[in-house]
Image 1: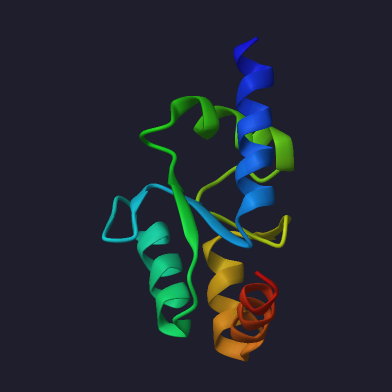
Image 2: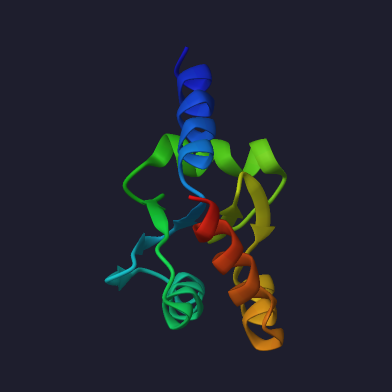
Length: 109
């Protein structure tokens, strides 16, 4: 039963937040370098984003990688779609595509 509840909760979070980052720690206090780098890239753009601290939510930490076949954290979702982890976020920030994606996502919200 817990598995179904966890999957439903994850899907609800992703559906309700145009931009959501599953990370270790919080934006104010990231608990790994990859999460810190991802938050830094998102924060530079200045658009709002939701987050889930997977260290405080072990069921989500266990279930999310299986649901979306992405083994590591952070994981960024925009408009319900998995964008990727830290490397992809930083690449997209560098080429400008992250800003365009977030502006479009937050304009629709």
